Amino acid sequence: MASDTGSRTRTRFRHRLRSRIVIAFVVFGTLLTTAFALATLYLRDRLENELIIENLQAEVDSFAAFKRQNPEPDAQFAFERFSAAIYGAHRFANIPLEWQGLESGVHDLTERAADGSTRHYKLAVRADADIRAFLRYDVTQEELGKRQMIGALGLALAGFTAVALLVGLWSSRRVMKPVTDLAQRVEDFVGRSDPQPLAPHFADDEVGQLAAALDGYAGRLTELVRRDREFNADVSHELRTPLAVIKGAAELILAGELQPKLRERVQRIERAARQCTDLISALLMLSRNERNVGAGERTDIARLCAQLIEDNRHTVAGKPVGIRLETLAEPRVLAPESVFAVALGNLVSNACKYTREGEVVVRVLEDRVEVVDTGPGLSEEDAARAFDRGYRGSAATGTGGGIGLAIVGRLGQLYGWRVSLVPRRPNGATATLVFGR
Image (cartoon, rainbow, N blue to C red; front, side, top):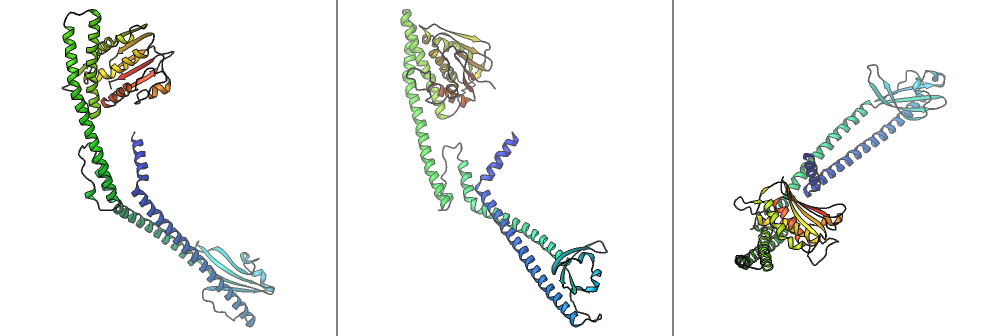
């Protein structure tokens, strides 16, 4: 879990605007310094080689001409940084082994000194038929200087990169500060019903225009939410009164002597009024997006399921369908009974509605309620989308709007329950409401 969080953090950093500015500065500084270093090395090497080759060739030519004019052995040609040797045709065998066979021109050679160090030198050769002239130029210091220069350029590269990073961090902080402040203030809106205006805190620039646009949007959204809550509260209040009258009248009628068929009809009126009251309470909680557990109200799930079965017996009347309750536990859950009545009532009602023959079993367990039916079943797609608002499965009949299960799903999200609907084989389905942890 920690690695997933770290991965998400790294991914978020890579895509932040400030990180892009920092990376751009670092990459630009690195590329610029690298190009400068490479260009310096190239120019230094080229100029050095041209200068050395030109000097060496000129010196060896002058040395050969001098010896022709002054063949005496004691005639000395003055060199500054060179050592020279010249051999006549009769002395070619005395030429050092590594110099033999070299053509006229300048050659790069290496030798091991007496102290074990390696010496690098350039050897200018003038190979004529009658004479072989050699001019040696030690470039060990130049090679050392080249390595030192590479080290210095490497340090410069690291320094420029560090400076580019610091400049990128500083400039990005300055550039991104208004955006960061805006993001922080927007995050502070979460959970508040009265968001404070953003525009007064920012200059009249792009960020200020964005803040003003967000203020307008927040104002419209706040007004819309306020009206929606007021409407739901008003509707809830206005509907509760006539429903209370209907329920009270039905109870008074049931208290008297009635014929069986008339009593059944009045009982249906009383049940419908109670269901409407429960539904209004549940919808009001959904609109406010807040739980209502009263004063520690606990619902007896087994008793409620027995009541829901009785309420839905008229749905299966006239069909070869049985409906029964299996009580394997007697859980009492901290939640309003009206919410459970709506959630479980929709599941039981759906099962009774779509089952043409067989039975509907409501099974109460310690942490869940299962509603098992022998209806026509449903496809995998229908099962996956059953709790989407407005979705009606391929086997749906009638004029329903596909809202009942959507309400169940939303109540589950509000109270932290898990709701599912899976097909059974060979037919039927199992709806499960898990309220335990």
